[in-house]
Amino acid sequence: MTVLLAGCAAPPSPPSSSVPASTSAPAPAPAPAPAPLPADPFAELFAGRLAGALPVGDDALVAVTVRRGGALARLGHDHVVAARRIAGYADPRQGRAVLRFRLDEMTVDEAGLRQEAGLAKQPSADAIAGTRENMLTKVLDAARFPFVEIRAQRLAGDTAHLQTDITLHGVTRRYLVPSVLATAPAGLVARGTLVLKQTDFGITPFSVLGGAMAVQDDMEIRFVIPVTAPGSSGAPAAVR
Image (cartoon, rainbow, N blue to C red; front, side, top):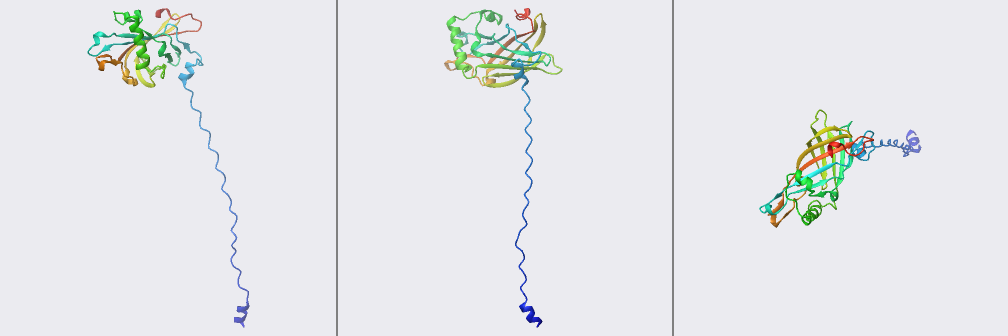
């Protein structure tokens, strides 16, 4: 009977197939917003937005002497090109300055600057016009790269040099530039000289006749940069 009862007993219920409802994981917290990039101090300075910034004076000068080369160099000329319309500011408290000028506003072979560079013979007006055309189109590509920008920073403990970033022809190079800073009645004046190479900026020096007449790679640079104090008139007398 036990066997019969066992045979008549209801079969055990199958195990439940229900699955507990899953609980979703909490959403991840949003990533923090990236920290804003620090303001470019040179851009702020060039815009004249920094308190205490002094504007570049009207008599600022960057003069560049390039000399002839090649087997037929005696038939060519050395040249002086100069920037006089220079925009920019200096921040004496931070020892920082930024300058910018247009290539197509540079002068070519001013008589006075040629004499200062020791170049006695003055080229003709036609020769100067040809030099200017070749410089702006075939050498500097001024339509594509119209500006030269200079960013200078005085380094701590070094009063004889400026760490200077020069952007020309779309290329920026850094140099340690010897300079002298002097006070003047209307503000401050920075002076110095240096030699750069055109090829450092991806520029091919001008040449004709397979290089028989050419411009040397070196650029001999002289600068006089006055900055004027608020309320002063004109550039410091030492620059005139």
